[in-house]
Length: 420
Ligand SMILES: Nc1nc2c(c(=O)[nH]1)N[C@H]1C(S)=C(S)[C@@H](COP(=O)(O)O)O[C@H]1N2
Ligand SMILES: [Mo]
Image (tube, rainbow, N blue to C red; front, side, top):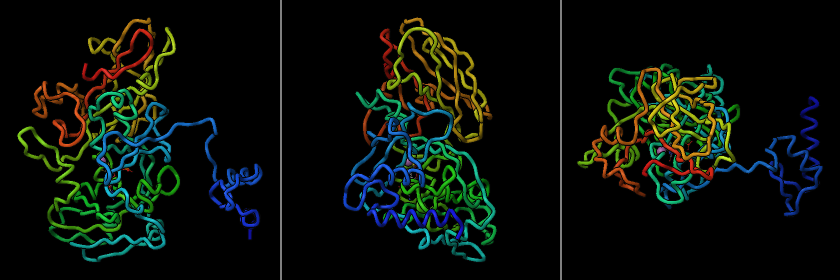
């Protein structure tokens, strides 16, 4: 036994004698732990300072009781990585026990139109060559125009996006090992929730950059985010990223499963649905100032925010402080990675007058983030129907990547100006 192991063992033994639940901070007797045992706990697996209080909150825009979503506190974000404990999460089978559980019991089956159907254990996957990338996830239900107090919050309006380093086995490797047969066109991915959450992914994308991820930001994927295994489909709308992944069936056509047809298909005003829109369009949001981060006084104030696109890297971000009449280029604070949140910064002096702040990004393909009116025109939604709404079905059911204006009032407070 090496010294770390013996230390660990001694700690466990001491903890058992003291009746401390290892991994938690309350003792078995329900009494607060001694400062010594608490110190031992924290040094085993750290926690943030007691003065830090940034948290996820339940999303205003979800459909209880089966749907639950917790939104990321974007107003507190720095850099490009979302701490795992603050990554948003969306669960369509809420109320049932969290799927996943013991990784030793977990199996991933690859079958269908393949020469060699294969079952992988969690540990098997970890022995394969590793694939890794920093990727955003964004739900297509993000950035819906909320009403009232909920609208006055960057967390509530835009918090269904987060960005992590994801690590796992490349799906292309697993499919190549299994041997794709002729006619293999789609990969059907299934989660182990009781509702068997399923999506169909074209085989071209499956062979390109999709990850079967077991790790998030340097440790195992968090339970709410799909422990022990999840799919990461870089740059595509979040509902493709099947969590608690247990099965990939290679098939010859898409399956139109519940969550990719009924609920996730984009709806046009005439009631027709546009299925299988995959990529997330270029999008940016100012996270400071914002309704949660009012201005504290006149003078210098850095404007900062996040930009991302399913189309690759962010090429540039422009900021306007006069409601869109003029635009100036912001600085991209690296790293600038494809299909990842990208931090932008902009020097500004607030003269104390009312101002409307907004950002717009362009991705490496040259695609530019639209205004809400431009997005409405593109989706065939008339301007008078772009008003805020709450709940399904919405007029703009599609992924919304419209420019977000924030209005700075004379007293430094900040309001959502998208619909005023
Ligand atoms: N098995 C399963 N996978 C799922 C879901 C789900 O409910 N069950 N929700 C999907 C949706 S709609 C989104 S937006 C993403 C969100 O990923 P996150 O919860 O890790 O943020 O997971 C997707 N994967
Ligand atoms: Mo979603």
